[in-house]
Image (cartoon, rainbow, N blue to C red; front, top):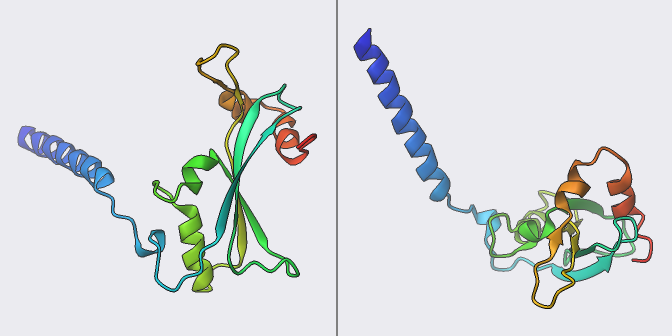
Length: 154
């Protein structure tokens, strides 16, 4: 019985180590890489000061696929913590994935909106901004929905 317990513990340790290594060694798939002949959409960065979240400032990016035709309807997908998802060299590379999947007709023409949580700029020169992420994401109210989708003054 003792050897069975030790064998189980050894197997558990080895599997945990393998999982940690696998996460660090993750290789992006082909849809996460730019492909020859695939039209490239445009990502444009914007910034706005919220009136709902007392003058917090947030950056957001809008991805418009090359196949978008403003005479036709398009899907929309919204990403929180947007900069992480819009980064073309980052972990997720959503605009590149969208380009590839739309080109292959594996997903419909979709506009991406990538929104960062708000920050309060420092009042001191060279100081650090203060994030409003936890308040915006974790507060149980309709304030976040109003802050994003009723862009007063945007």
